[in-house]
Image 1 (tube, rainbow, N blue to C red):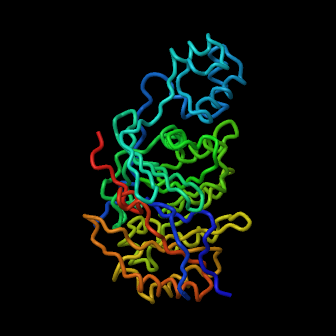
Image 2 (cartoon, helix red, strand yellow):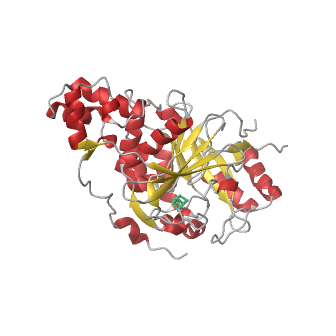
Image 3 (tube, rainbow, N blue to C red):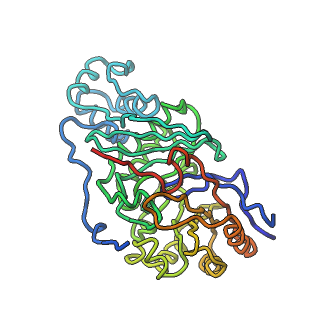
Length: 389
Ligand code: SF4
């Protein structure tokens, strides 16, 4: 039986891009990897404690320290994460004296919307300013099939994938857990989703496993029953394959869906397109994927950006089939979104279809992404902030 992509399946993701795919119907730079070894900490927490990055337990402990009761810490978490309220004065279930103490000693930071761009196809991109003036982008993609938020984990990215605009920025800094979760809070509040289910794809700017602790803490904040209670089934984390991070992720109680930005089928080709491959080679990455504990009925999504004349040949497709042999996998083909400064071009539709057909003939579920938000530069690989403070 031929297995091809289907509409109605969960969001089909892409690193630094967005989970908009359509089924395959036809049947119908030199890179210095030492960047990775240099810890780039988030800005030192100066001044008051930022409550937006604390778990319910951490908030309860803080509230008790301030003379309140532990359950009030949970109420505080609900105000911040479920109701999107950041002004202590408006948290009317908390005693006045506690609110006054919180106002003296703590803040709730929230990324500030600098600009909102809306695409003709309904995609919305928010340019957000962080507390230190740096800027990131987060995107809302409607009907994919569910509503989906795409969030960033770093300002820029150290991975420097050869086809990605974000990679050209380099890495300015990691985001904190508060800043990562804060993007969802802002999107949900701005677009009226505080009480409506949505999906999250961790595929905006940055490599989430390069900022592991903050990313996982943010996902736990978002998953908390006291907050937005986003099920891990609704979350997809995409990585270029930082193998130690994958091994850690495999043991997490809050286990999102996994997407791997593969993009190549030989070590030499991947070294060129995805330079992290020089540190964690394809063979090691595929072994980590085979060991990854998948939930029942779940699969790993392999993202494959298609670059004309580079990785789009029938031989590439056949090697991809071989690489994925025996894995519970689906493939999302992503014809390149061309951009100035990216030295690759988009293959023809015929070329993409021929590639997809080879995968489909091998019973691999395959989807071809339909680009969304290209008119506002919100599509795959197009996120880049022109000027960060
Ligand atoms: S450079 Fe690579 S890892 Fe970084 S954002 Fe772009 S595609 Fe993702």
